[in-house]
Structure formats: structure tokens, C-alpha cells
Length: 180
Ligand SMILES: [Zn+2]
Image 1 (cartoon, rainbow, N blue to C red):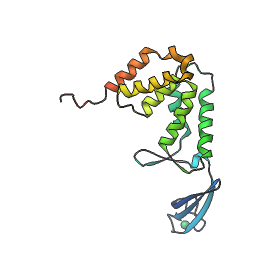
Image 2 (tube, protein in one colour):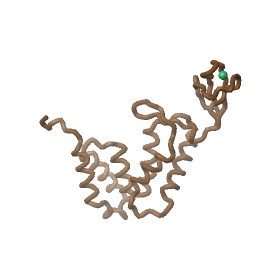
Image 3 (cartoon, rainbow, N blue to C red):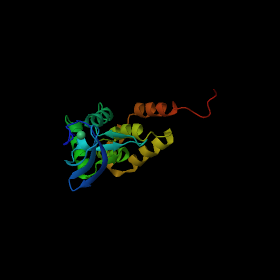
Image 4 (spheres, helix red, strand yellow):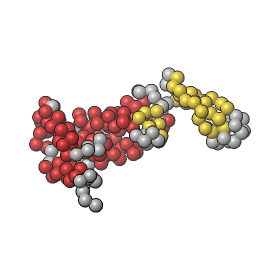
């Protein structure tokens, strides 16, 4: 954001708040120290994701798409499903009207959508995202899915290979009982 006083390209944001569909930012020029206020329309490009470790990162549509694509790999989904899903999620984030969104909130939205779409993709995504502590908590999640009536049509679709590999992955995490 160019400084209106000296034209310097870089400024720091000292305050940021939402006003309707806009975000009002107070800025300070890093060149001359001039303070000015901008009103920017909220676009996902302006959305900042708050990560678990509190670090901030600009929302990255491609990164989101890559994670979802990986979860949906080789699933029998119509072409364009992932792009449509990412569009939907992006709109939902915009509707939240917030400039800063915790990554956990984004993760929950993705998991909700995947759960409706394809249970294998959901379990894959959740196993990475939730970082299931052990095979028991993963199994609980699968059991919950199986218990939900909507799953009936998909019941035979959880490949045992997939579950086994998830289980191996979980067990591969460092164990307290292992001897050094
Ligand atoms: Zn300046």
C-alpha cells in the first residue's frame, strides 16, 4: 500500500477492523512514518489465517485446493468437484466477514463439506488435519461415520488397505515405551 505522503511502497498495519464488507486498516509508512487509513474490500486474498502456533499466514486458495485434492485422490468424484468445493469454501470464508480466521475454523468447514461428499476423502483429510493421536480415536471417528445413517450406501467403501495404512502411520509416531 503506497504511502500517500512520500509514495513509499511499504507500510505496517497498526490496527485492523471490519466495517461492513470492508476492512479499515490504520497504516504507518515505513519510509517516512506518515499515518494513513485505508478501506479495503474483503476478498479472500485479504484473509489472514491464524495458525495453531499463532503465526499469521495469508489465505492461500491453492494450498487449500492441494490439501483437498490429495484427500480426494482416486475417489470416484465427478471432474470439477474439488474446484467447486474450494469455491464453496472460499465463499463461506468470505461470508464470515472476518479478516482473520483461525486455521481450525477452515479445517472444520473443509471436514464438514468432505463428510457430505465422500467419507474416505473425509477420513483422509481428518487423519492429517486432526492428527489422530492413536488408532483408537481414528476408529472412533470411523465408527461414528458408520453409525450415521447417511453412510449406509457407502458402507463397503472403506478399503481395509486404507485403514491399515492409516493405522501403520499412527503407530509409527514416537512411542514413550520404546527403548532408546
Ligand atoms: Zn511515506
